[in-house]
Image 1 (cartoon, rainbow, N blue to C red):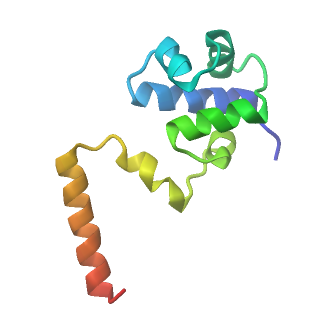
Image 2 (image 1 turned 90 degrees about the vertical axis):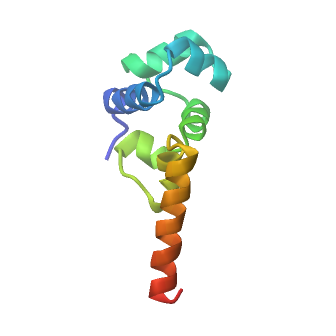
Image 3 (image 1 turned 135 degrees about the vertical axis):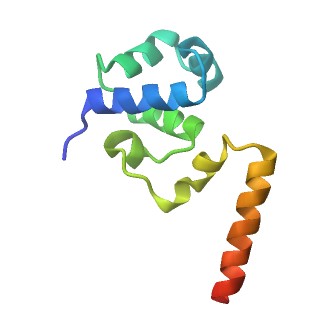
Amino acid sequence: MFYDVKKTAGIIKELRKHRELTQEVAAEEMGINIKTYQAAEQGSRGLSIDTLCIIADYFMVTLDYLVTERREANEWSGLVENLTDEQKAQLFSIASNMISTLGW
């Protein structure tokens, strides 16, 4: 499997849109140059491993996800990030009840 720059670009763009951010805000918050970020979303050039790490960390996904779009179990934090406090409390309650029922 090879690093598909266009696929990674689409993944990055969707992550940003999901958080309802502009490219400028995302780049600024990550501390990367806006031109570099725009190139990342356009897929006009490959990204350094350092830049991929910054982007993955910012969106709370794995490098594997950025490159392959496969979700790993440790990405729960990224999924939970956009929930309201009430939704997080409900999810925690459901998970706690499930774990208790399973005897873990």
